[in-house]
Length: 315
Image (cartoon, rainbow, N blue to C red; front, side, top):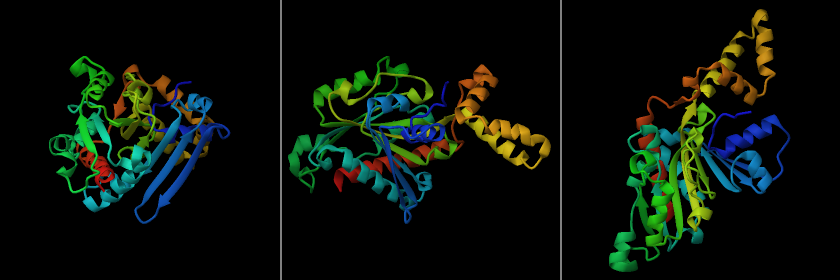
């Protein structure tokens, strides 16, 4: 049965925990930072069988959830950036010092919900050219990493896979690690613009919206690949499902409607979404929805990610 699309390992783990017994080979650890109102959930996929069930590669998936991510106040989003930097330092080789890092901003800068990667890259502190010109004393910290960046665009603009472009650049500059930034799809509307996923498994660009491109992973790149993403779109079927659940909850007080509500709630979430998917027209089946203020949100979220990277690299 087809599932609602999501790029978040956290949501896949929640679905499995809801529908069946605990899946062997998957571990989840949760931490809540009360002072900063940030929830950090780490999902470990340890076995190939668990990876197949989850539909995600083996590896570590760290999710940061906070309502402050899209807030315009710098102090509110700064705490999210600092926590993102801590996560990145744990995943970066050598803790981020004396590294050569290539950062790729995936997505189409002309399509606002997909412009997260390109906009984040524009706000990075790039150092490779200065270090190449003036050596390690170009900056106060002699261990400043060599940071370079690229925005490969999308196949419709270039005629090439993002993997092909990034790999061509990497073969010339030989980075120690690749960091890719991309917009994601979520299964829950409450996670749009409020969640950052960081993983050491790389990324399959476009998979969340059904546009499968070549995977950008350690296997395909020949170097560690860290992927950072924020969900910016959700399927229309998810919104209809959430609305239906809310509607039936409101009608539970009515005896005549209680049987309908009970019948609906006896269905698993995947069965509910499959039924809605079959009832929706083909046009709505292929529709993804994004918040109306997505332009302002992308601007703030891209800054939050860029600030987190800059802190991880230079502090």
